[in-house]
Image (cartoon, rainbow, N blue to C red; front, side, top):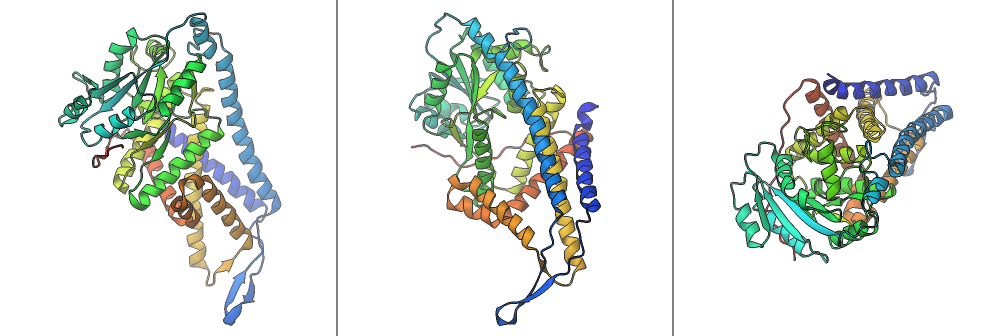
Length: 470
């Protein structure tokens, strides 16, 4: 019942928040009685403008509320991270850095090794490029295993031609998570504390320096459990592709502003210390949800997000260093984007519902609440603007709101600056990204309704032409 209602609860809280803001503005007589001024410009062109602006009290109140809410959730997150890093409680936080370091104190367990698992289901167009990007790394993997899950195409033959190991799933009905559980059940028991496992999607290309950076971090910090990649969008795919690239650029920038603190260990490419994965499997059904003995929870729609929460709940230290960058596949049509994001959004809601309200999940709850609030705020803005246009005969310019648009545009451009002139120009235009955000908002609402009415979730996947890496 809790899982079914979780989306509706978030939406209800967001609506209440908007109602409070609306009431505050109404109470301060924000509309005012200002009369527009008629100004004559060159060639007899007349424009109407008004210096009307929201009352100072309303502006200060809105900013204060935003800072208070943000500080509250940040405080909970920082407190939880600090406690986990200092914890010596092997029963509740078996992956806390102090616990892991105490287990290997005074021991040399060999150099850090990297075993890469590439889950693949009918990826004959992509598997070669993924393997080539691994071979092109300065620090090549010690072992590459292509995890072929119910493949009916040439994926296995192509992978075998590169000399990598092949693991074919047996009677697997749990998609990617089930196939990975099968292969890890075989390889994890023989691994030591300095052996790491990398999960890399077939549609991913590692950028130079990824593995050497990751190995250096694992070597220097015995308490580090996992490293997540910073993902960027592949070239091409037109306007829709650029919109996704801008979105990924901002996400990576946010991670860097957080000091590399991981929000999600992306399924595109993440590396785990073997003992961390083993502890997750051992803790399923007791400290964390899931079937005992399984690394991945096969009931989770977004297994990478669920595994991230699982590791955090066990006290794991995780990072996303700037040197660990990947290039990932983009959706080239709105329907495929819809399918992908609906799975992500619904999976995120289901995951936090499964773990409940805890200090570890507070950051995820705040994100979902923020999304719900932004959905209704943005669409309320659209409705009010439309009503104003229909109710007035003349367009009135408001310098206050024009300056706000300028500040917003500057922020959008600044946050995608490393993406080049195309990214900056698209951000400066504002409207395309606003429409894109509105489309993503609709996906959020669809995810909420699907959960509320227990509709079956579907997993879509897009294929593309083969790509090789020089």
